[in-house]
Amino acid sequence: MLKVGIAIGLFLYLEIYLIGQVMDQWGVLTTLLLLALTAVLGSRLVKREGVATVQNMAIKLQQGAAVGLDLVEGGVLLIAGFLFVFPGFLSDGLALLLLLPPVRRWVAVTLVRAFRQGGGTLHGQAVFVDAGGTIIDGESTPVPDSPTTPVLQLPPPGTDPSRRKK
Image (cartoon, rainbow, N blue to C red; front, side):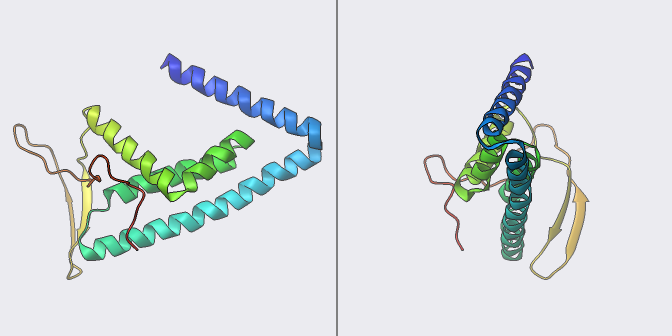
């Protein structure tokens, strides 16, 4: 927990330092306009990528494929949106990286693998729609001593997770 606090403190220090450097070079008004512009443009980019992710999930659901990894990618987009709104140039650069589909997919896969290695389970409420349009709403609970089926389908190790079929 201490490492997280130090990382956040260092991040905030770098953000303030970069804003100060830009203010020294270009002035206060220009810096504030740049920060506002990146927030507005960034939110539009996040919206566009979010719509594309939702459309991709809808196609996968119609085909009966798993959408778990796409949901995690949506969470990564949510983080990117927060980073764009957070004032600073370092956060905007990180958010731009998260908008790139290969980077976003890599972060999502890494998060899922870290979650699984940490002993996390992916159980809870779920809504499924079959090919006929029937909606099945339910809950799942882990059963002791029973094999569990993975909710998320990860690409095999060594493959490029950023390649998507369109």
